Image 1 (spheres, rainbow, N blue to C red):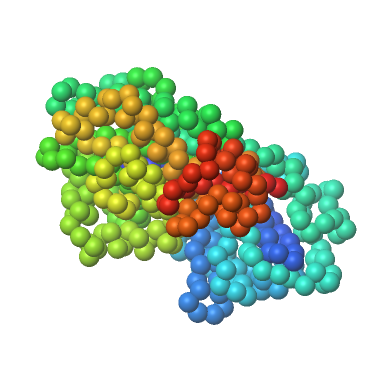
Image 2 (image 1 turned 60 degrees about the horizontal axis):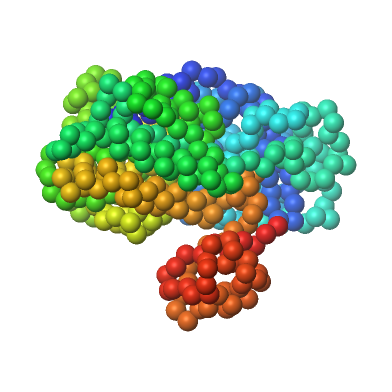
Length: 454
Ligand SMILES: [Zn+2]
């Protein structure tokens, strides 16, 4: 049920709030392609960021939560044509350090954390595309690395030492053990369905060399909420998907749905969650009913606005859209776009996250499908395809999937394999082999992965 998702999020928020962090150093590397800004941190960063592109100067605003800034930002050497100024700004709340990067163009940055490696500890990396004249003198490196000299190449050496790794996908089978979840009219437990699909999804993911699955539970265990979510942090998951098949009060047929989270009302819901679990659960279902009523819904609009302010939410929304598209190929959908609701505390999660309702177990026909082995296979395949597509479209630096430089191609009318191959400069056989095609027949709308190689 949605309740456990929300409470799990609360657990995350608490734990992250107990870790004090500090910004220890700021380094800037301009190059012919981009400027990289590295924040050296005392601990794994908890951060959000947003951009201001509707007026000048263009800005990237980064909020480091529960963090003390120990760097005199005015002393940081920049020497970049892309980043003009790095300065502190008024903190939105106590304990948060806000840093503003003023940049020359309205370019969406890539912002990602890096764990300890070599001489470097925890870092937050901000890459902003755009050329800096390379004939300029190299900036003095303000690095804590004793090996660093000003003759080092512009590309941070520490990044080269980060090994190529698989994407880590955390799969949460909803409920379990003493908590059966919802119960269908024929007596099917939600916890059984979620675990079956979670295991199938994990098997599909683990068969992909570019991915690794971690499950919050592998058997019929009761998990504390902290246990359920600790896997995301412990395994440094790149993605978190929680599987459910809830019952709702009416038995009308309803399809699968994918939920994303918004910050709306987060504090109040957190409070309510602590006070009264049952009441909160009912309220969340109320929110869902509100969302069904139409486009003008203020919760939904607000939810989408909030998502654009927060990268992981925006990623979650894009992932949800892609997953819905894949699910729509194997089952009917409750709605053909992601639904937002106010599980706002999940903003503490830097990991893109979605909650998938595989179908509503309260519907007798759906209940039969949900325990059908073939249908479970199709659902797992669709989820896998959606997650993989999301990461092909949004590569994560340092992962093997990103290294393989795959492009998604949707077959258009009149296109043949040879036309597509020529367009990307790859061989027809390469495309066939990579996509497991037995013949040269392709159909309009078919999705192909085009491996461009290194
Ligand atoms: Zn559930």
